[in-house]
Amino acid sequence: MSEKIKVTIDGIPVEVVPGTTILNAARQIGGDIVPPAMCYYSKLEGSGGKCRTCLVKVSKGSEKDPRPMPKLIASCRTIVMDGMEVQNITSPEVIEARKGVVEMLLINHPLDCPICDQAGECHLQDLAYEHGSEATRYEFDRRTFEKVDIGDKIQLHMTRCILCYRCVFVADQITNTRLHGILNRGDQSEISTYIEKAVDNDFSGNVIDVCPVGALTDKTFRFKNRVWFTKPVEAHRDCGKCCGKVTLWYKGNEVLRVTGRKDTYGEVEEFICNTCRFDKKATSDWVIEGPRNVARTSVINSNHYDTMHPLPVIKKDLILMAANKVEFEKATKD
Ligand code: SF4
Ligand code: FES
Image (tube, rainbow, N blue to C red; front, side, top):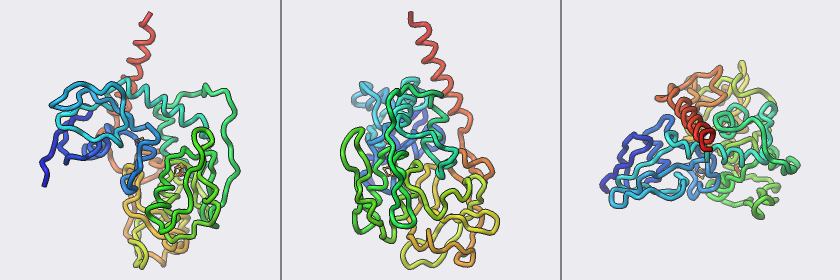
């Protein structure tokens, strides 16, 4: 086994195996010092490097070469070096840059959370709360698209897509056939029209779980309820195609939807098949294990079993302090 190397993130040291990214080193520490990730998904090879929400500052490159990195870098794509020192929520520069990234993502993404099925579980909604400004400075028309049905169970609302590529990686890696990708570049980019051809692969429903926003939604659940009014329950069944371990989302006695079990980073523990997701909505189909803790801090936590986070207050305070520092420096510059 290779020797571990030491990296310090926001003053907290951790030892990791060589080849670990800064983001994954931070995840080993856990808590609020972990950078947000809108495009990286640990279960999807090659993901990351698209959204820039995970930017961090490397204040010391390594023990051998302690020079800081000249620019903020994407933590999901940068490998740690021995002795590296990284700042995330302790850096005012990072907080300011992240605020800019969120503003950029919101240029085209509508703030239609009140009518969006992803509300309560949306990573962009959380980031907007944390870093977003109240008004947009964008003066041009936003991109809008017609909604597209991808088969009879999934709907694509491209207007909300942030082009994170996660669904493309799912199509590429989880299903046997790649049925869609991203066409064109820049402002013209969109999930290609191939996606309109029904994605009838047994695992295609996983694009719903990996989408960080409400661009890909479950048509069997659309507008049925707000997620914070539903009760998540862990259940399993003997499935010949997938692990059969899911979360059932109940309203009263009715199972409104079935999803993979999501961790504190909003990633599923294991991908599930379409039969489990769409066709097994009776309690009798499942062996019930018990209530599912909502591991991720989001709007959904109201009304739900919550997992305690180690540093719940510190993050808000640090972000506030960093933001105040930027404002203070701006105000006292002249
Ligand atoms: S549809 Fe969702 S998962 Fe796919 S690229 Fe857009 S935001 Fe990402
Ligand atoms: S999560 Fe790192 S660039 Fe998107």
